[in-house]
Length: 290
Image (cartoon, rainbow, N blue to C red; front, side, top):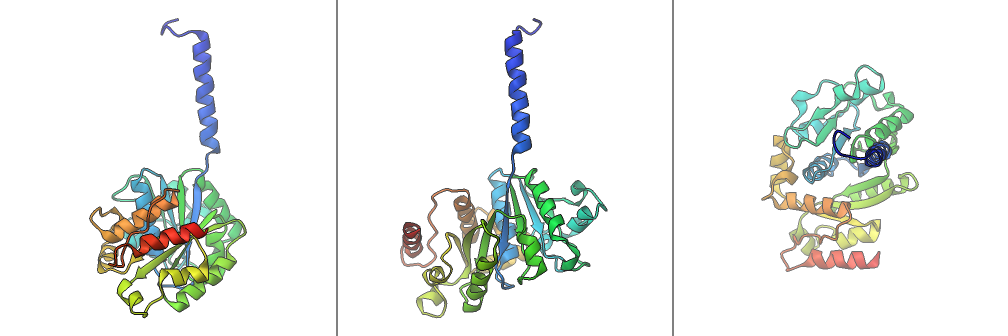
């Protein structure tokens, strides 16, 4: 033969190519809803930072802003000037999915599917949202869905296509209470994990803020990460630059560790207590009980 390969070798190669094509067609990514129940706890910031950190690890990631009427994820990512279409346009066939997706400026494998600012949450049919998320799962390793606050139609649409959930709470009684309620409303089979956001260790030590252990006693969720309350997060968010892409950022490192744990790695929770390993001991204690 011209290239020196036997018919058997060519047939084997052809079979391998076909099998790879079938495998790719059957491959589905994971849809994860980022939720909390209470507004203002950092869901959108967490969605942006977790997505950016996953993409920086080489994963293909689509971030979906499910907060119809109150779009913010594009601003946190610094992509607001690039938004032309939104996911309702895709559902209503006013544009293609490719036309609505917005490419991130920094990480090639990260895209955003924005929400509509001038529509209502009730404009989205749950079945259509589920079909959209299913389509995205066939294209990306991870689909992160930024869930709106509350437990009405927006929440139902955000969780309908998810296999996993990340519950974000701050160390406040009201936030933890609302997070507990949301956990009870997640669809059956959705695996939930916890991120404790905006922790101030000095307030915890003085008894002025709930500790991670106290939050765990209430929620009983596997802990993905503890994010310190630091000014750099506000600065980075205002600039539209996910802090998880900043290698020198302590908060960014906390998000990167959370992503490592999300992908199944045994990574310790970083120590923000200043007492030589409180959170490392806490992580080991929680991990040993599960």
